[in-house]
Image 1 (tube, rainbow, N blue to C red):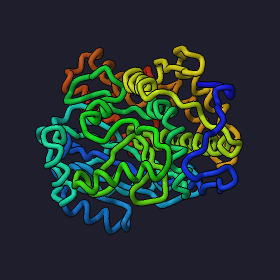
Image 2: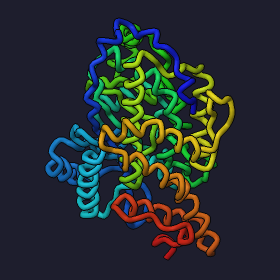
Image 3: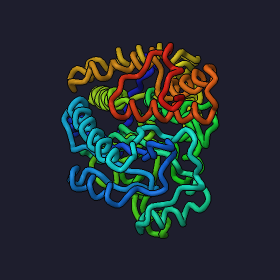
Length: 410
Protein backbone atom coordinates (compact mmCIF):
# COMPACT_ATOMS: atom_id res chain seq x y z
CA UNK A 1 0.00 0.00 0.00
CA UNK A 2 1.64 3.28 -0.97
CA UNK A 3 2.03 5.72 1.90
CA UNK A 4 0.82 9.33 1.52
CA UNK A 5 4.05 10.13 -0.32
CA UNK A 6 2.61 7.96 -3.10
CA UNK A 7 -0.07 10.57 -3.77
CA UNK A 8 0.42 12.88 -6.70
CA UNK A 9 -1.02 16.30 -7.59
CA UNK A 10 -4.30 15.89 -9.43
CA UNK A 11 -4.08 16.78 -13.09
CA UNK A 12 -7.84 17.08 -13.29
CA UNK A 13 -10.43 14.81 -14.84
CA UNK A 14 -12.32 16.23 -17.78
CA UNK A 15 -14.18 19.39 -16.75
CA UNK A 16 -14.05 18.59 -13.05
CA UNK A 17 -12.23 21.24 -11.05
CA UNK A 18 -11.35 21.37 -7.40
CA UNK A 19 -14.12 23.75 -6.42
CA UNK A 20 -16.73 21.78 -8.38
CA UNK A 21 -16.36 18.67 -6.22
CA UNK A 22 -19.66 18.29 -4.41
CA UNK A 23 -19.60 15.41 -1.95
CA UNK A 24 -21.39 12.33 -3.28
CA UNK A 25 -24.18 10.75 -1.29
CA UNK A 26 -22.13 7.53 -0.79
CA UNK A 27 -25.38 5.57 -0.47
CA UNK A 28 -25.17 1.78 -0.68
CA UNK A 29 -27.15 -0.94 -2.42
CA UNK A 30 -26.15 -4.61 -2.57
CA UNK A 31 -27.06 -7.30 -5.11
CA UNK A 32 -26.42 -11.01 -4.54
CA UNK A 33 -26.84 -13.98 -6.88
CA UNK A 34 -27.61 -17.34 -5.26
CA UNK A 35 -27.34 -20.86 -6.64
CA UNK A 36 -30.30 -23.12 -5.82
CA UNK A 37 -29.53 -26.66 -4.69
CA UNK A 38 -31.68 -29.71 -4.09
CA UNK A 39 -31.55 -30.45 -0.37
CA UNK A 40 -31.55 -34.21 -0.96
CA UNK A 41 -28.87 -34.53 -3.65
CA UNK A 42 -27.08 -31.25 -2.81
CA UNK A 43 -26.66 -30.76 -6.56
CA UNK A 44 -27.78 -27.68 -8.45
CA UNK A 45 -31.33 -27.84 -9.66
CA UNK A 46 -31.75 -27.72 -13.42
CA UNK A 47 -34.61 -25.24 -13.16
CA UNK A 48 -36.23 -23.17 -10.47
CA UNK A 49 -39.84 -24.23 -9.82
CA UNK A 50 -42.13 -21.52 -11.28
CA UNK A 51 -44.13 -21.42 -8.07
CA UNK A 52 -40.99 -20.63 -6.06
CA UNK A 53 -40.20 -17.55 -8.10
CA UNK A 54 -43.83 -16.43 -7.93
CA UNK A 55 -43.72 -16.77 -4.14
CA UNK A 56 -40.47 -14.79 -4.01
CA UNK A 57 -41.88 -12.04 -6.21
CA UNK A 58 -44.99 -11.76 -4.07
CA UNK A 59 -43.01 -11.70 -0.82
CA UNK A 60 -40.06 -9.55 -1.84
CA UNK A 61 -42.01 -7.07 -3.98
CA UNK A 62 -39.65 -6.23 -6.80
CA UNK A 63 -36.41 -7.03 -4.98
CA UNK A 64 -35.90 -10.41 -6.59
CA UNK A 65 -35.05 -11.36 -10.16
CA UNK A 66 -34.20 -14.31 -12.33
CA UNK A 67 -30.58 -14.59 -13.41
CA UNK A 68 -28.71 -15.97 -16.41
CA UNK A 69 -29.18 -19.60 -15.34
CA UNK A 70 -32.46 -21.28 -14.46
CA UNK A 71 -30.82 -22.46 -11.23
CA UNK A 72 -30.09 -18.91 -10.05
CA UNK A 73 -32.00 -16.24 -8.21
CA UNK A 74 -30.92 -12.67 -7.43
CA UNK A 75 -31.91 -10.31 -4.63
CA UNK A 76 -31.17 -6.61 -4.34
CA UNK A 77 -31.53 -4.26 -1.41
CA UNK A 78 -33.04 -0.83 -1.46
CA UNK A 79 -30.74 2.20 -1.37
CA UNK A 80 -29.38 2.74 2.15
CA UNK A 81 -27.34 5.46 3.87
CA UNK A 82 -25.04 3.00 5.63
CA UNK A 83 -23.51 -0.42 5.07
CA UNK A 84 -25.09 -1.75 8.25
CA UNK A 85 -28.58 -0.75 7.10
CA UNK A 86 -28.01 -2.47 3.76
CA UNK A 87 -26.77 -5.54 5.60
CA UNK A 88 -29.82 -5.67 7.84
CA UNK A 89 -32.12 -5.70 4.81
CA UNK A 90 -29.92 -8.25 3.06
CA UNK A 91 -30.32 -10.63 6.00
CA UNK A 92 -34.09 -10.30 5.73
CA UNK A 93 -34.01 -10.92 1.97
CA UNK A 94 -31.87 -14.01 2.43
CA UNK A 95 -34.15 -15.36 5.14
CA UNK A 96 -37.15 -15.01 2.86
CA UNK A 97 -35.41 -16.88 0.01
CA UNK A 98 -34.21 -19.58 2.43
CA UNK A 99 -37.71 -20.09 3.85
CA UNK A 100 -39.50 -20.07 0.51
CA UNK A 101 -36.96 -22.35 -1.18
CA UNK A 102 -37.24 -24.75 1.74
CA UNK A 103 -40.94 -25.20 0.99
CA UNK A 104 -39.89 -26.69 -2.34
CA UNK A 105 -37.13 -28.90 -0.97
CA UNK A 106 -34.44 -26.46 -2.14
CA UNK A 107 -31.90 -24.18 -0.54
CA UNK A 108 -29.89 -21.19 -1.77
CA UNK A 109 -26.13 -21.10 -1.38
CA UNK A 110 -24.32 -17.77 -1.35
CA UNK A 111 -21.14 -19.06 -2.95
CA UNK A 112 -19.77 -18.15 -6.34
CA UNK A 113 -19.35 -21.73 -7.55
CA UNK A 114 -21.06 -24.96 -6.60
CA UNK A 115 -18.58 -27.57 -5.30
CA UNK A 116 -19.46 -30.30 -7.82
CA UNK A 117 -22.21 -29.26 -10.25
CA UNK A 118 -21.50 -29.72 -13.97
CA UNK A 119 -22.05 -26.83 -16.33
CA UNK A 120 -23.35 -29.07 -19.12
CA UNK A 121 -26.50 -29.79 -17.09
CA UNK A 122 -27.44 -26.12 -16.71
CA UNK A 123 -29.61 -24.04 -19.04
CA UNK A 124 -29.99 -20.31 -19.60
CA UNK A 125 -33.15 -18.58 -18.43
CA UNK A 126 -35.70 -18.17 -21.22
CA UNK A 127 -35.74 -14.40 -21.46
CA UNK A 128 -34.81 -12.37 -24.53
CA UNK A 129 -31.84 -10.72 -22.80
CA UNK A 130 -30.38 -14.00 -21.60
CA UNK A 131 -31.04 -15.79 -24.90
CA UNK A 132 -29.13 -13.02 -26.67
CA UNK A 133 -26.23 -13.28 -24.21
CA UNK A 134 -26.13 -17.09 -24.53
CA UNK A 135 -26.13 -16.85 -28.32
CA UNK A 136 -23.39 -14.22 -28.34
CA UNK A 137 -21.12 -16.03 -25.86
CA UNK A 138 -21.60 -19.52 -27.37
CA UNK A 139 -19.65 -22.25 -25.59
CA UNK A 140 -17.93 -19.82 -23.25
CA UNK A 141 -21.29 -18.65 -21.93
CA UNK A 142 -22.49 -22.17 -21.18
CA UNK A 143 -19.73 -22.53 -18.59
CA UNK A 144 -20.89 -19.56 -16.54
CA UNK A 145 -22.20 -21.56 -13.58
CA UNK A 146 -21.44 -19.06 -10.86
CA UNK A 147 -22.86 -16.12 -8.97
CA UNK A 148 -21.47 -12.77 -7.88
CA UNK A 149 -22.02 -9.92 -5.49
CA UNK A 150 -22.31 -6.29 -6.60
CA UNK A 151 -22.12 -3.17 -4.44
CA UNK A 152 -23.52 0.12 -5.74
CA UNK A 153 -22.25 3.33 -4.16
CA UNK A 154 -23.91 6.63 -4.98
CA UNK A 155 -21.56 8.99 -6.85
CA UNK A 156 -23.86 11.37 -8.65
CA UNK A 157 -21.36 13.48 -10.62
CA UNK A 158 -20.36 11.81 -13.90
CA UNK A 159 -16.81 13.18 -14.00
CA UNK A 160 -16.14 12.31 -10.38
CA UNK A 161 -17.51 8.80 -10.93
CA UNK A 162 -14.92 8.20 -13.68
CA UNK A 163 -12.15 9.78 -11.61
CA UNK A 164 -12.92 7.56 -8.62
CA UNK A 165 -13.12 4.50 -10.86
CA UNK A 166 -9.64 5.24 -12.18
CA UNK A 167 -8.20 5.49 -8.68
CA UNK A 168 -10.19 2.68 -7.02
CA UNK A 169 -8.87 0.07 -9.46
CA UNK A 170 -5.80 -0.20 -7.23
CA UNK A 171 -7.87 -1.60 -4.35
CA UNK A 172 -9.97 -4.15 -6.25
CA UNK A 173 -7.65 -7.11 -5.47
CA UNK A 174 -7.88 -6.29 -1.75
CA UNK A 175 -11.67 -6.42 -1.87
CA UNK A 176 -11.62 -9.64 -3.88
CA UNK A 177 -9.41 -11.38 -1.33
CA UNK A 178 -11.92 -10.71 1.46
CA UNK A 179 -14.80 -12.31 -0.48
CA UNK A 180 -13.39 -15.45 -2.10
CA UNK A 181 -15.85 -18.36 -2.16
CA UNK A 182 -15.18 -20.28 -5.38
CA UNK A 183 -12.32 -22.76 -4.93
CA UNK A 184 -14.10 -25.67 -6.67
CA UNK A 185 -15.14 -26.34 -10.25
CA UNK A 186 -17.05 -29.50 -11.22
CA UNK A 187 -15.83 -31.37 -8.16
CA UNK A 188 -12.17 -30.39 -8.47
CA UNK A 189 -10.22 -28.23 -6.09
CA UNK A 190 -8.78 -25.73 -8.57
CA UNK A 191 -6.10 -24.46 -6.19
CA UNK A 192 -7.56 -20.97 -6.66
CA UNK A 193 -9.44 -19.11 -3.96
CA UNK A 194 -11.56 -17.54 -6.70
CA UNK A 195 -12.10 -19.76 -9.73
CA UNK A 196 -15.07 -17.62 -10.77
CA UNK A 197 -12.83 -14.93 -12.24
CA UNK A 198 -10.84 -17.51 -14.19
CA UNK A 199 -14.03 -18.51 -15.99
CA UNK A 200 -15.24 -14.91 -16.24
CA UNK A 201 -12.00 -13.83 -17.89
CA UNK A 202 -12.99 -15.81 -20.99
CA UNK A 203 -15.83 -13.37 -21.63
CA UNK A 204 -15.45 -10.15 -23.59
CA UNK A 205 -15.57 -6.78 -21.82
CA UNK A 206 -14.45 -8.15 -18.45
CA UNK A 207 -11.51 -7.62 -16.10
CA UNK A 208 -10.06 -4.36 -14.85
CA UNK A 209 -11.28 -1.26 -16.68
CA UNK A 210 -8.81 0.92 -18.49
CA UNK A 211 -8.07 4.42 -17.26
CA UNK A 212 -10.37 7.07 -18.78
CA UNK A 213 -9.52 10.75 -19.02
CA UNK A 214 -13.12 11.92 -18.72
CA UNK A 215 -16.75 10.89 -18.72
CA UNK A 216 -16.91 11.86 -22.40
CA UNK A 217 -14.09 9.45 -23.25
CA UNK A 218 -15.91 6.66 -21.42
CA UNK A 219 -19.18 7.43 -23.19
CA UNK A 220 -17.47 7.60 -26.59
CA UNK A 221 -16.01 4.15 -25.93
CA UNK A 222 -19.38 2.67 -25.00
CA UNK A 223 -21.24 4.42 -27.80
CA UNK A 224 -18.87 2.99 -30.41
CA UNK A 225 -19.98 -0.52 -29.46
CA UNK A 226 -23.63 0.45 -29.23
CA UNK A 227 -23.69 2.16 -32.67
CA UNK A 228 -22.23 -0.94 -34.27
CA UNK A 229 -24.71 -3.30 -32.62
CA UNK A 230 -22.09 -5.08 -30.51
CA UNK A 231 -23.95 -4.31 -27.27
CA UNK A 232 -27.33 -2.81 -26.52
CA UNK A 233 -26.07 -0.60 -23.71
CA UNK A 234 -23.40 -0.31 -21.03
CA UNK A 235 -24.99 -3.06 -18.93
CA UNK A 236 -23.19 -5.58 -21.15
CA UNK A 237 -19.82 -4.25 -20.09
CA UNK A 238 -18.87 -6.55 -17.22
CA UNK A 239 -15.76 -4.95 -15.77
CA UNK A 240 -14.70 -5.54 -12.16
CA UNK A 241 -15.72 -1.94 -11.51
CA UNK A 242 -17.98 0.13 -13.72
CA UNK A 243 -20.34 3.09 -13.81
CA UNK A 244 -23.77 1.53 -13.46
CA UNK A 245 -25.90 1.60 -16.58
CA UNK A 246 -29.05 2.03 -14.47
CA UNK A 247 -28.12 4.23 -11.52
CA UNK A 248 -25.76 7.15 -10.72
CA UNK A 249 -23.49 4.73 -8.90
CA UNK A 250 -20.04 3.22 -9.15
CA UNK A 251 -20.69 -0.50 -9.18
CA UNK A 252 -18.21 -2.92 -7.58
CA UNK A 253 -18.42 -6.28 -9.35
CA UNK A 254 -15.17 -8.09 -8.56
CA UNK A 255 -16.20 -9.84 -5.31
CA UNK A 256 -17.42 -13.38 -4.97
CA UNK A 257 -20.73 -13.70 -3.15
CA UNK A 258 -20.09 -14.39 0.55
CA UNK A 259 -21.98 -17.06 2.53
CA UNK A 260 -21.70 -14.90 5.67
CA UNK A 261 -23.63 -11.63 5.53
CA UNK A 262 -21.14 -9.99 7.89
CA UNK A 263 -18.41 -10.59 5.29
CA UNK A 264 -20.59 -9.07 2.57
CA UNK A 265 -21.22 -5.98 4.68
CA UNK A 266 -17.50 -5.71 5.43
CA UNK A 267 -16.65 -5.62 1.71
CA UNK A 268 -19.33 -2.98 1.13
CA UNK A 269 -18.16 -0.88 4.08
CA UNK A 270 -14.52 -1.03 3.07
CA UNK A 271 -15.39 -0.21 -0.54
CA UNK A 272 -17.43 2.89 0.30
CA UNK A 273 -14.75 4.00 2.77
CA UNK A 274 -12.09 3.72 0.06
CA UNK A 275 -14.21 5.82 -2.31
CA UNK A 276 -14.68 8.49 0.34
CA UNK A 277 -10.95 8.51 1.07
CA UNK A 278 -10.18 8.96 -2.63
CA UNK A 279 -12.76 11.74 -2.85
CA UNK A 280 -11.25 13.40 0.23
CA UNK A 281 -7.73 13.48 -1.18
CA UNK A 282 -9.14 14.66 -4.53
CA UNK A 283 -10.66 17.61 -2.66
CA UNK A 284 -7.10 18.41 -1.58
CA UNK A 285 -6.13 18.38 -5.26
CA UNK A 286 -4.31 15.08 -4.99
CA UNK A 287 -4.94 11.72 -6.58
CA UNK A 288 -3.86 8.14 -6.04
CA UNK A 289 -0.75 7.47 -8.06
CA UNK A 290 -1.65 5.58 -11.25
CA UNK A 291 0.05 2.26 -11.95
CA UNK A 292 0.17 0.26 -15.19
CA UNK A 293 -2.76 -2.03 -15.83
CA UNK A 294 -0.22 -4.84 -16.15
CA UNK A 295 0.83 -4.42 -12.50
CA UNK A 296 -2.72 -4.03 -11.22
CA UNK A 297 -3.63 -7.23 -13.05
CA UNK A 298 -0.78 -9.06 -11.34
CA UNK A 299 -2.26 -8.20 -7.95
CA UNK A 300 -5.67 -9.27 -9.21
CA UNK A 301 -4.23 -12.66 -10.11
CA UNK A 302 -2.47 -13.01 -6.76
CA UNK A 303 -5.72 -12.23 -4.94
CA UNK A 304 -7.58 -14.78 -7.03
CA UNK A 305 -4.95 -17.46 -6.53
CA UNK A 306 -3.73 -17.09 -2.94
CA UNK A 307 -6.39 -15.24 -0.93
CA UNK A 308 -5.89 -14.07 2.65
CA UNK A 309 -2.82 -16.24 3.27
CA UNK A 310 -0.96 -14.79 0.30
CA UNK A 311 0.84 -11.59 -0.55
CA UNK A 312 0.09 -8.64 -2.81
CA UNK A 313 2.44 -6.09 -4.26
CA UNK A 314 2.76 -2.79 -2.48
CA UNK A 315 3.74 -0.85 -5.56
CA UNK A 316 4.79 2.17 -3.50
CA UNK A 317 7.39 0.04 -1.72
CA UNK A 318 8.05 -2.13 -4.73
CA UNK A 319 7.73 -5.39 -2.81
CA UNK A 320 5.34 -8.18 -1.88
CA UNK A 321 3.61 -7.73 1.48
CA UNK A 322 1.46 -10.21 3.47
CA UNK A 323 -2.20 -9.46 2.91
CA UNK A 324 -2.92 -9.07 6.62
CA UNK A 325 -0.40 -6.24 6.88
CA UNK A 326 -1.91 -4.53 3.84
CA UNK A 327 -5.36 -4.67 5.39
CA UNK A 328 -4.09 -3.12 8.61
CA UNK A 329 -2.56 -0.26 6.61
CA UNK A 330 -5.69 0.17 4.53
CA UNK A 331 -7.94 0.30 7.59
CA UNK A 332 -5.70 2.93 9.15
CA UNK A 333 -5.84 4.92 5.92
CA UNK A 334 -9.65 4.95 5.72
CA UNK A 335 -10.43 5.18 9.46
CA UNK A 336 -11.55 8.80 9.18
CA UNK A 337 -13.81 7.94 6.27
CA UNK A 338 -15.30 4.81 7.83
CA UNK A 339 -16.11 6.80 10.96
CA UNK A 340 -17.74 9.56 8.92
CA UNK A 341 -19.84 6.97 7.09
CA UNK A 342 -20.78 5.13 10.29
CA UNK A 343 -19.19 1.86 9.21
CA UNK A 344 -15.86 1.59 11.03
CA UNK A 345 -16.90 -1.57 12.90
CA UNK A 346 -18.12 -3.21 9.70
CA UNK A 347 -14.94 -2.30 7.79
CA UNK A 348 -12.68 -3.56 10.58
CA UNK A 349 -14.38 -6.96 10.35
CA UNK A 350 -11.78 -7.44 7.60
CA UNK A 351 -9.30 -8.40 10.32
CA UNK A 352 -11.64 -11.20 11.39
CA UNK A 353 -11.87 -12.45 7.82
CA UNK A 354 -8.07 -12.50 7.55
CA UNK A 355 -7.74 -14.35 10.86
CA UNK A 356 -10.27 -17.11 10.18
CA UNK A 357 -10.13 -17.24 6.38
CA UNK A 358 -12.80 -16.79 3.76
CA UNK A 359 -15.44 -19.22 2.55
CA UNK A 360 -12.92 -20.61 0.06
CA UNK A 361 -10.60 -21.53 2.92
CA UNK A 362 -13.44 -23.10 4.93
CA UNK A 363 -14.73 -25.11 1.96
CA UNK A 364 -11.34 -26.63 1.24
CA UNK A 365 -10.75 -27.34 4.93
CA UNK A 366 -14.17 -29.01 5.18
CA UNK A 367 -13.43 -31.28 2.23
CA UNK A 368 -9.99 -32.25 3.51
CA UNK A 369 -11.32 -32.85 7.00
CA UNK A 370 -14.10 -35.15 5.85
CA UNK A 371 -11.82 -37.10 3.52
CA UNK A 372 -9.29 -37.48 6.34
CA UNK A 373 -12.05 -39.06 8.44
CA UNK A 374 -12.59 -41.66 5.74
CA UNK A 375 -15.66 -40.09 4.12
CA UNK A 376 -15.84 -40.85 0.37
CA UNK A 377 -14.99 -37.81 -1.70
CA UNK A 378 -18.45 -37.51 -3.28
CA UNK A 379 -20.08 -37.46 0.16
CA UNK A 380 -17.43 -35.04 1.39
CA UNK A 381 -18.32 -32.61 -1.39
CA UNK A 382 -21.95 -32.92 -0.33
CA UNK A 383 -20.76 -32.00 3.15
CA UNK A 384 -19.22 -28.83 1.74
CA UNK A 385 -22.60 -27.96 0.22
CA UNK A 386 -24.27 -28.56 3.59
CA UNK A 387 -21.86 -26.12 5.19
CA UNK A 388 -22.68 -23.52 2.54
CA UNK A 389 -26.41 -24.04 3.06
CA UNK A 390 -26.02 -23.51 6.80
CA UNK A 391 -23.84 -20.40 6.50
CA UNK A 392 -26.13 -18.85 3.90
CA UNK A 393 -29.03 -19.37 6.29
CA UNK A 394 -27.17 -17.55 9.05
CA UNK A 395 -25.17 -20.21 10.90
CA UNK A 396 -21.83 -19.16 12.35
CA UNK A 397 -18.73 -20.64 10.69
CA UNK A 398 -17.21 -23.59 12.48
CA UNK A 399 -13.74 -23.40 13.99
CA UNK A 400 -10.91 -24.95 11.96
CA UNK A 401 -10.83 -27.95 14.33
CA UNK A 402 -14.44 -28.72 13.37
CA UNK A 403 -13.79 -28.47 9.62
CA UNK A 404 -14.23 -32.19 9.19
CA UNK A 405 -17.83 -32.28 10.34
CA UNK A 406 -20.79 -31.97 8.06
CA UNK A 407 -24.25 -33.36 7.49
CA UNK A 408 -23.16 -34.60 4.08
CA UNK A 409 -20.83 -37.06 5.79
CA UNK A 410 -23.63 -38.92 7.53
